[in-house]
Amino acid sequence: MAGFRRLLLSRFAAQWGDGLFQAGLAGAVVFNPERQASPLAIAGGFAVLLLPYSLVGPFAGALLDRWDRRRVLVMANLLRALLVLVTAVAVIAGVGNDVLLVLALVTVGISRFLLAGLSAALPHVVPVRNLIEANALAATLGAITAVLGAVCAVGLRAVFGEGDAGSGLTTSVAMVGSLLAAAITVRFVRGALGPDEVDEPPEALLAIARGLFDGGRAALRAPSVSAGFVALIAHRASVSISLLITVLLMRYSFTDAGPLKAGMAGLGEILLAGGIGILLAGITTARLVGRFGRRRSICSALLLAMLAELGFGLSMTLPAAVLATFVIIYAGQVVKLCVDAACQRDIGDETRGRVFALYDTMFNLTQVIAVALAATVVPPDGRSTGLIMVATVLYLLGVAGFGLVSRRQVA
Image 1 (cartoon, rainbow, N blue to C red):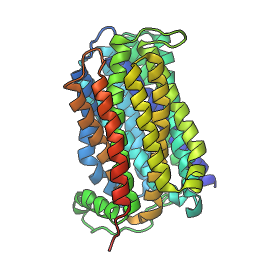
Image 2 (spheres, rainbow, N blue to C red):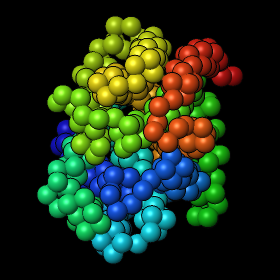
Image 3 (tube, helix red, strand yellow):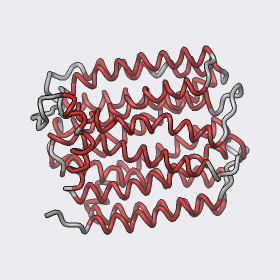
Image 4 (cartoon, one colour):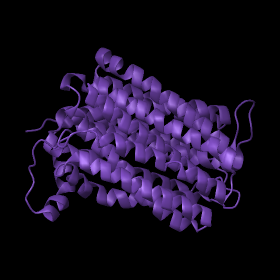
């Protein structure tokens, strides 16, 4: 299992740097006293970060099924390290938010591409019978590592300062994660991470252009995968609305509540609560699936998240936000781990990279649309019980849609 351990270390380094980069940039744009952020500005940030990669992700996914994944991961990590440095210099120089978000777009796009590659490579270092446990461990500890990176960003801002200079220095530290990830990945032998075979035409441009179609066709042939996509779309739409509201509440509405803090420190508490939820999901998901089955586990997780959303909407307090974050992230991670395992188990290696790239694309689009629509109606201080109710209903729709698609039979 040496290959699995090495892949884990590469993932941890990359996700630690990614968490630090995103939190550092959020501090630079949203919680920076030298800059202001409205709901529409925050929504625009989400769009710039997620939408363009969503348009090119499926085509990039074809590369994961065509080129040596080891080489792709190493080069992508090195490119990301360079972009982190450029972004940090731009923050220090005080350039406008639009330029920062474009730089962040490319950097986070590469991060998503890397995660798709790591997920596609996992079956090459783990036996099929252990995929659920291995995926739970990798995704859970990787997500927790990203949270730790974000928490490090909060701490570094306290040291370097909250202005442009301090935010830039904080963001620059994220390049360490990318460099470490590249150094670890290069130790794999060529071809060790796949793809084992290529079912694409010899013309590279044609193969890349087919990425979206091939990924969608492979996902539709597997009801377990397409049903899981429906469940995750509902979760991502709901949690995106909650995230926008929470950021606005932390920035403009909440005040300190005992040991819980508002502002950037409060965002750190939200991240920590989410990290604990992710850890608990990693510990319990395999047992839940083993006892109740995948379908019941996914439906139960969605209903649990729905109840947490409802409780948050009724109270709209800082403690309620932290508690709801813990429960919602826990439930969403249970669903994600089940869907990841379905993709790795029921999708062939020759198309797995494209399916995971499509996976990212669909959910990025969902987040962008949900946040953009919510930003047009949310009050500036974030207090909107009505939007929370919308997020609650989305979970019910997710349960219904998951059940319907799960019963579909493929001829």
